Amino acid sequence: QAIRIIRAVLEKYGTYESFEVATGGRLLSKCQIWSVIRKYMQKEGCVGEVVVQLTDDLLSQAVMMVEDSRPTLAINLAGARQHWLEGMLRHEIGTHYIRGVNNTRQPWHSSEGRKQYSLKPANPTEEGLASLHSVLFRKQPFLWRAALLYYTIERASRLSFSALFQDLEQYVQDAGVRWEYCVRAKRGQTDTSQPGCFSKDQVYLDGILRILRHRQTIDFPLLAALGKVSYEDVNRLKKFGVLEKARIPHFMQDLERYMKQLDHIVTTNGLDEEELEQLLPD
Image (cartoon, rainbow, N blue to C red):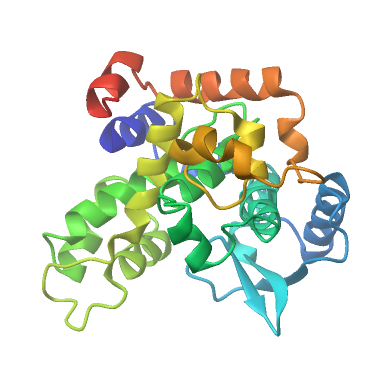
């Protein structure tokens, strides 16, 4: 599935670089980035709740963390393109942060609570949902990043760092971008000349495919409202959840439009419903 998504992008755009320019648009100045962030925070009703830092030394596009006990979003300036920035905010704020806030109000907010209610791990649902929200509303919602991360990890488990760097050249010519993917895949390895990988990055595509496979039966607003839970636990937890004053991301309010976007993601990426069912049986 990952290779099919990557090839679909290359067939349409020729190279990763032209895909980036055509779909991402131009890089934004700091001033423009602040303006987009401010408007987005207003839409989600969380102005002043999250500290935002702009940086150029992040391994990822953006990351949500807690610093000095305040929720903090660090954004990589190199990834802040005009058509991609809002998706990044839907990923970090509209998914991770909002589900995190809702989670603090649930009886399973602690690790003891999770055990008590026999919760499945939040991933791959958490990162899968966030990754879908990154591409939601794009004209061409290709799941390129999730697919290439998945492929890179798979190859890293068999290749050295330098062989992996060469292998990725068939998909990405830009050495800086390839370097970033390789470093992500090999982080934590004591000897990068040996095969071996940091496999967390496979969670994005895994979660995406699982959610898309079951999208007709998932209650998405509830999935956001119940906090850091797996889509598989939603129906079971409904009766225990604290749903009063739960925050729902603004882009889920029009659920019909949201579901159409998920269908559009499936079609754009050449995903086959029957194949998904075979790949992920009930």
